[in-house]
Structures are given as C-alpha cells and as structure tokens.
Image: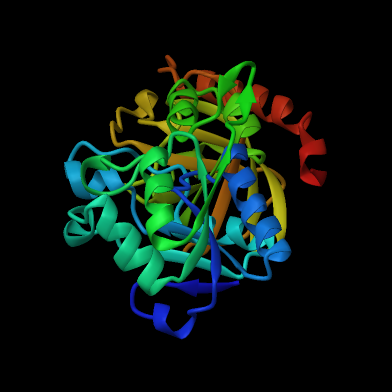
Length: 310
C-alpha cells in the first residue's frame, strides 16, 4: 500500500476507486467501504484507494471544541494495510482545505488530482465547506465529471448504526467491550513509555506510564483489563486511567501494570488494547487497602490469559 498526500498525487494518476470519509476508528462500517473499494477496483481494473485526513476535520473548524480521535494516523495506516489497498490518500485538513466548496473538492481534488472514477461512500457522507455536500450532490456531479457513486448501507450493532460518534460515546462510558465489537478489534491506546512518579513500583506493582497524544480519546476513568503489545510480544495488563486519588496526584495519567514482565521499557512505543472495565478508580484509606485491591485485580486479570491468543 502506497501512502499519498497532497504533495505527491501526480505520481499516481491511475484511474481509482476511492472510498471517502473521515475513517476515524476504521470501524466495521468503514471496513465495508474499504472492502467495496477493493472489490470494485478488481472488477473495473482500477486502483483501490481510501481518502481521509491527518486530523479530525472538527479540529480545524472548531479549534478548542473538536472530536477526539479513536485512532492515531499510525494506527489508521496499520489498519488500512490489512485490506490490500493500493493507496491510502491522507490529506492535511487545513484552513484552506476546509474552505473548498463541494464542487471544488470534487473537481480539483478527486477528479483533477486523484483521477477518481468510482466513489464509495456511506449514505450519510458529507463533504465540502460547512459539510454542504451530501450523497445526493455527489451523484449529481457524477454526470458532469464522469464518475460512478456506490453507496454502502450502514452496519448495525443491536439495531444501532455503527458510527465513530457512537463508539466515542461508548468509550466515554467505559464500555470498551461494546466499542470493540463496533471496531471489529479491541479499542487501543498507544504511545511512548515515560517516567512517572513510580508509585506503582513502591507498592510492588510497577507500571508503565504512557504518553498519549492529546488529540486521542481516553476511556472513562477506572481500571481495565488490557492486552499490552511491546514489539511483536503480547502481555496481560491492568491499566488505570485516572488521577491516583489515594496519593492526591490529580494529574490524569494512563498507567499499565504488565503482568509477568520485568524489563526496562522507558522510551519504548507500546500499544494497550482494552478488554474490560473492572472497577472505578477510588480513593483508598491506606496503601495496604490499595495493595489488597491490586492483588484482587491481578487474580482477575490472570483469568483473562486466553486473550493473549486472540
């Protein structure tokens, strides 16, 4: 899969089937769009591709009141690569791009730069300045610019259409199990391991403190059973998202105790997959009470060792 941005499109001007969307999360609905792009590219002897952005569009438009991301760009590219796409087209959604009219987006970007011949979209796809463009308009312009439009019906979970906003609401509630069902994989956070206050080490449960991109969504504060990916290795983990109220820290952190692991991983990049929320983060009366609870969390987490093989 070749990565294309706004600076190198002229090198790859073959006729393309393009799946269009934000693709934040690359959930089951997004995956159907991607699969259809690949399928149509084969039957029409074109190149399969997906078009998305480096940041959520709301960050450029609303500045301080934008949607938090379900996936980093690194994770997004990793997921795209699983579908045998020819191209992942990832543009910068800057101020200039946000001002493009629906017509200009189609003519200047999709047609002139990317040579789109088939557009694959969901039924609620929006595009152009102020999201003024919709599927109906996309179809209307297809007659002028000689491309086809293929609409993919939404995928549902318990009669609820799967969407990035729906998944965000689940994660905000700490319902990572349902969120993972919508994603078709475990919801995860990733980042570099940084030095923390070493409270866990003092208690006998040393934790990896992970620096998370501030643009990424965090689950509801609490304790989660997790699977930790370090390079090509996987381990069980217990992850706390919160402020360590027992020690009056008050700085939000993501810390993971990696079970049956004793290596120095400061500075390493790791990924933490969330399996289940097991309890709230609470303030304990003493370190002894906290240690006792952590021992109970450890026993519970060990019962999930089967996930290492999933």
